[in-house]
Image (cartoon, rainbow, N blue to C red; front, side):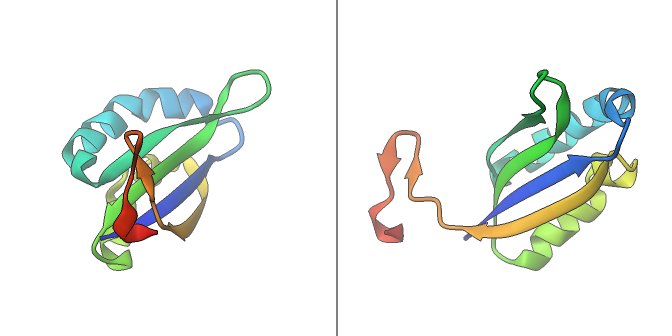
Length: 101
């Protein structure tokens, strides 16, 4: 499995839209949870949500792209800019995954 960091930035003034779409986002996360290593909202200095950070695990980049194409925050135009990087998760749940070192 390949791990990916997904940094997704909300569009300007999208916080009300984010909060409206959030229940559908969480329903989707429930369906996708086997692929989620960790996830959460990114915050500005005042503590307001400005985007999302996810570490996800898929067999291929294409599977990640399929997830993103159907993600409610994408479909409903909350996330304006998405950055994806590969990651090698070596510590998870306080355990070192030695075969990934």
